Length: 277
Image 1: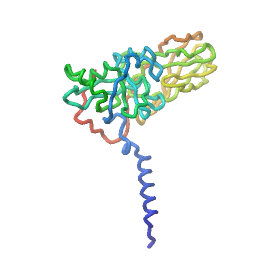
Image 2: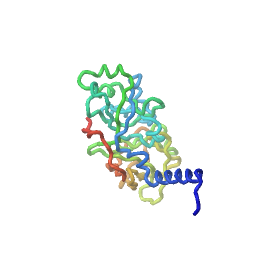
Image 3: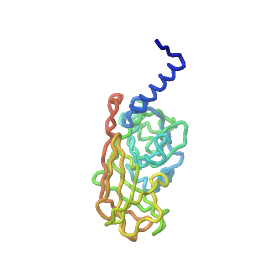
Image 4: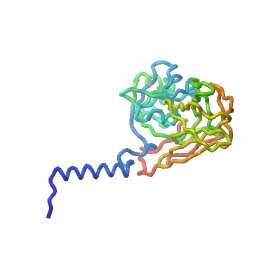
């Protein structure tokens, strides 16, 4: 009978574990919509949320009542997470309420201490009763978080022509009010009446761009990822006029509301979460 040396046996064990993680990634990493532990800090100055890495600018303050935030590189994913929603709650039962709050990702943090940074007002709103000032004094607090669907009732995705655009040779756009629990992973543009697709590149954050876009009225298509599902969606009408303008905002006539359908083990949500404000 053949024998297996300890070194070969160790190699087979490592190979088996790696194959298991590849085939069943949720076993090793957990579902994105599950509850995860982390820490939370707040911005040192009040205007920081309006200059976030996603490129939303002052528009950020209109999202979820200004409850926006920066996330770590692992969550930010080079801008893919811009516009995503996370529910966060503090774990100190003496200082914090049970529901927490929902924030929209508008920024990126390089902090090694925390996965989330939010405005001071959002931070203090995690407190119970009048204990907001005590929470602020703590500076960095332990939290739990999970990704949740963004909800914009009856709100179509808006297409904003970014300030870096230069008509007609360089078109840069942002897609505002991206609903559901989704990631936009590819974007293409078409001249109305043409079947030819021209793909945009993610320039940075939430900004997609293309040089020498088609001339004429334009419509868009998207590849959207939610959990284990990927689908294509497209606008059915002209979105940008032939004389589009830098800084202008146009209605796509399209809504995205898909929720995460990950095929992984059920999450332990530590007793259940109520919907946050």
